[in-house]
Structures are given as structure tokens and as C-alpha cells.
Length: 409
Image (cartoon, rainbow, N blue to C red; front, side, top):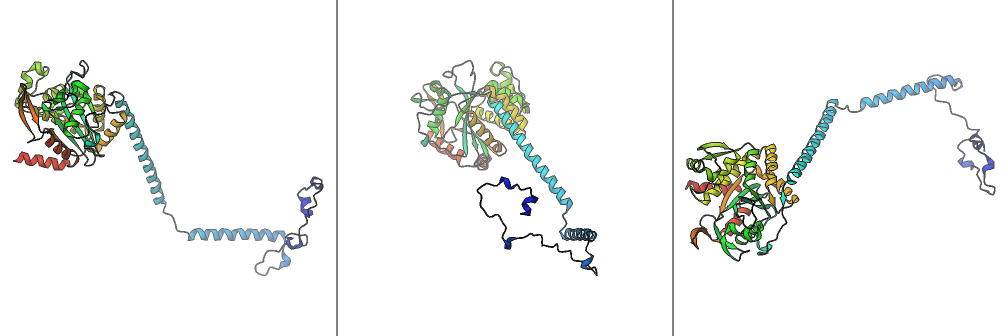
């Protein structure tokens, strides 16, 4: 057929035995030599006989002009877009993308700084408490309890002979968004499970090291401790100095005690009144005991910690400097991942209210002389109930309101 010739069809390329009918049926013939091109519709008085290539060009030109006019009319009928709004949206999108980028940079930088700090800490293996079942200890998902232990000489002494000089529980309460600090008095006469008899609380490290202190507190007071962090007093000085000192109100008796006993406090001088203490001065202030009791000594330690937290809670740079300065002096049985989770959970709690207390609580103890030693006899069951309520049930506002009411009486 003609269409094959026009397309350069070569009959020799057909298959020899191909007997298929390739003709087009008459009812499907859409194109033939007898078909005539219908001339375009003419306008005005122009006759069909006037059709010519020139007229066709005029027709095409007129058709294109008409199409352009119709397209222009459609564009005019469309609702106009507000170019200012588009520009605003574009700028807003860029700002949003920029904010996300900044947040990601801050997070990545923060994580890198956190990892750098965590890499300087000394890690111990976790030792499970074999003297009490975990199901018998009070715990909640939204609360993390970390035991801070301060010792006089961690590097030069064995853990069996290094009694904790201070024991403070820091409770990170994400449920109530606050921090709670509870000091345990070292002269508390309690049952030491690793020894099998009662003794001062600070002797609990003699048998099982620092895990022994955790065991004793869990056994006597029934709260679950997630782990311990141990440091010596060199860290305390480095930490305070890293943030430029702490503001403390020093009484006249406290200033005289430190200044008049150079050997006891490392040749430190204090003056009465509100002032900024250096690391060495803050350490001396925290160790004052002779002028009053161990209760007041523990309170002074919490006062310094509170002052430190006041300095860093709204200043991330100071917080990082403090953590970086303290890290090499720290020893813990918490893993890096545990410390990271606790650190991030504590950040919003830093901005909330804080509370501080000490165990034994009021009305749950008495002074006693046992085997010639002056100690604090403790009612463990009463303290267990009060401590559990303090850590897990009460808000910081409730606790501070109760303390204010006691002081007012």
C-alpha cells in the first residue's frame, strides 16, 4: 500500500511464509486519495472559490491572534496572587529552615561537649545489692536517685579505709520538675548489712567499697538508688573556681572558726557577711563542724551546692565549664548512657524549685552513747516512710511551704 512505500517499507524483509492479510478494511479506511481537505470557514463575503495558500496563511494568523486574546482574557479572569504574601511565605520558610539548622547545630555541639565531659570520668562496675530485693525498694519511672559521696583522699587511700565524709542523695524528680537534696548524717547508727551488725553509716564502705554505702542506705531507708558518684575535695575546689566562685552568707562564728584554725582548714581566711567564696574557701566553709553539729555541717554543704546551682541554671556555658572541671575527679558506677539520660532529664529540673533536707528527719532520732561513742540513734522505719513521701509524693512547693511554716513557729 502507499503508506508502506512512503515509509520506506521493504517487501523483501517480510517473512517468506507470512500469509497474514495486511490490507485495511474499507470501514476503517481513514485516509485515501479521494479525501479532500475541507477549506477553512470564511468570514464575511469571502467565497469558497477564493481559497488559496495566501488565504490559509491569513486564516492561521487570525486564528493565532484569536487564541492569544482568549488566553489573555482567561489570565485576567484568574484571581490575582498577592506578591507580598508570597514573598513573606518565602522568607518565613527560610527563617524556619534556618531555625531548624541552628537547633541541630546546638544539639550536635551539645552532645559532642557532653561526650567530651563523659570521657573524662572514671567508671566502676555496677554491683547489685545482695541484701535487699529490688521489689522491696520504692522507685518510680520519673525519679532518678543519685548518691553523691565526698571523701577526704580517694587517690591515696583504699576504699576499705576511706570513709565517706559526706553523703548526699540528689533526686532528679521529672514528675514534679524539681531537684531534691537529702543529706545522710555520717554518725547515724544504723544496721550495716555487709557487716551484719549496727555501726555508723559512714563505715559502710569498709566491706564492699562505695557500693556498700548504697547497700546500707537502701536496706535501712527503702528507696532505690540508681547509682553513686564519688569525688574528693579537690574536685569541689575546681568546680567552684570554674564558675568564678559562689556567693555565701558567712556568720561571725563561722568566719572565726575557719580563720583561727589554719591547720584544720588549710590556712584559709573568712570574714563575716555575704561574699563570693573561692573554691578553697567554700570547701573550708563546708567542713565546719566544731562550732555546732553535724546537722548544721550538712546544711552548709547543701547551701554551697544550692549556690552553685544558682550560678549555672541559666548559663549553659558556666554549666559546661563546671562539668568539664569536675569530670576528671569523678568516679561512678553509672554508665555513660545512664549519665547522659540523667543529665538531660535534670536540665529542666534545674530551672524549677529545689528542696533540701537531712536524714534522720525531725522526731525520728536521738543522741546516744554506744560503746563509748557519741552517735545518732535512728528510727529507720519512721525515716523510711517520711523519705519515700518526700522523694516521690510531694512537690517542691509543698515541701518548701512546710519548711517555711516550721521556721515561722
